[in-house]
Length: 303
Image 1 (tube, rainbow, N blue to C red):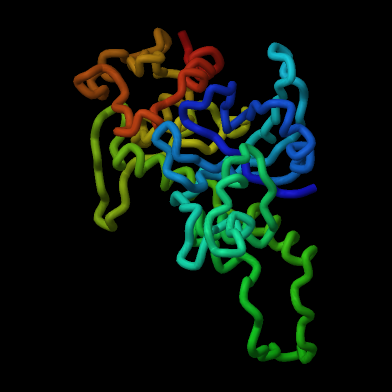
Image 2: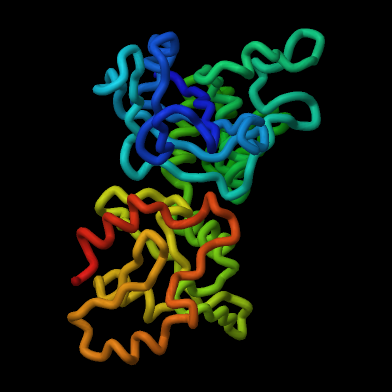
C-alpha cells in the first residue's frame, strides 16, 4: 500500500464525484492500484479556476473498469472517509514544495511530474499536508525534525528509538483516525453559510459569541453521507429537527417543501424566510448537491 495524490478539477471532463468516485484512463491503472486500501489527497490544479493546492483526503476502497467507457477505470472511495481540509493547502511552501518530489535538483518545479493526474506521495509529505490542512491537529503528526534533547518521564529512563518508516506510517494513520470530523464539518458548513440558518434566514449569536445554528447532514453519515459542505446545511435547532424527521425537505432549486403530515403547516410557513427557498452559500461550489437533496426527498421527506 502507498499514499497518493489525485488531481481533480472542478470542471473535470471525467465522471468524478470526489466524495464517492474518481474516474481515470488506463495509463494510470498500475499506479492507482498501489493506493487501494490507503489514503489519497485531492489536488486542485490551475485549470477551471483552480488554486494550485490540496483540498481534502479520502481512502480508496477498490478499483474496477468503468462499466460504460472502454479503457477507463473507477476508483471507489471508502464511505465516510472523504473529508475536505479545514483550510486550503498551497502546493508551495517557504523552502520549496509540499511534495518534495516536485522539487528538481536546481530547486525549480518539476513541471512534468506536477502534471501527473495520479502520483505518489511519501508518508512524510502526506503528514505535512494533512497537518497544514487540519491545523489544530498538527501536534499529533510525526516530528519532521530530529529530537535534540530527551527528558525521561518518572519511571522511564530509556531514550526512545528514532522513528522508523513504519512508525511514521502508523502515526499518520492514528492522526487521521483522531481528526474530529464533527468539528471540521461544523466549521466548514457554518463558514459557508455565514452562520445563518438556511431555512429561517436568521443569524443568531449567543452571549458567548457562538452561533446558534447547527451543521446538518442532508444525507446522514449512517447512510454513508459524506462530511462535505455540499452535503450540509446550516440550520437552527428547530429547522434541523424538522429536516431530520422529514417534516420539511428541499427541491433541487432549494424550494422549501412542507410535508402534508405536519399538524400546523401555516406555522412552519411562517418560519421560512420570505423567498420560500433555502438560502444557499455564496460560493456555487458549496451549494447543496442535487443527489443529496434527492436522497433526502426519497428516503426521509414525508410526502
